[in-house]
Length: 175
Image (cartoon, rainbow, N blue to C red; front, side):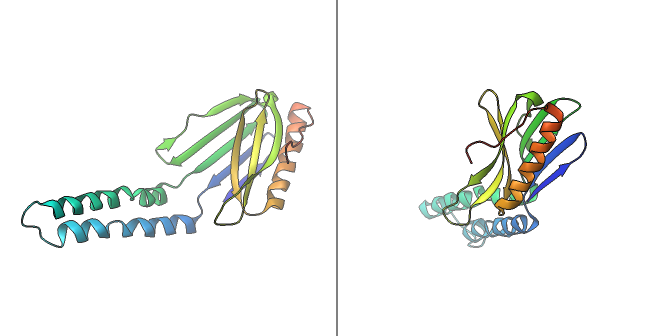
């Protein structure tokens, strides 16, 4: 879910996991607890043999899949802030409340493009987000929206805001 908030002095673009996605991941993570229980605790093993070792490996694999559970609890997303008075752009990606990338901080006057980014998926419809390009060729991307027209409207808002603060006419490229 993408949210864009444009104020007089700042633009904030935030992407978070939707509640439904978190609920589905949480439910899927609970099923991974069934294999360790059924393979290790329910049979009441009397000794250690090849079958016990094989069951332990499967159980450990199932426990490793608990990442779905933790992803649901922690959430994840990206955050992009354009701050006019400070003259900076800050981008942070996070996968939960205790795990985030180091903030990518740039000067506002380094922004050269704001474009709609298309994420193509083999098993579902394309999704769209904003990509902000910089003078050195770097780019940060934020957003995960099913509607291209909505992201285009966000892009236009951000471009108008940037023109006001930098005086440059920021245009999309590569669309």
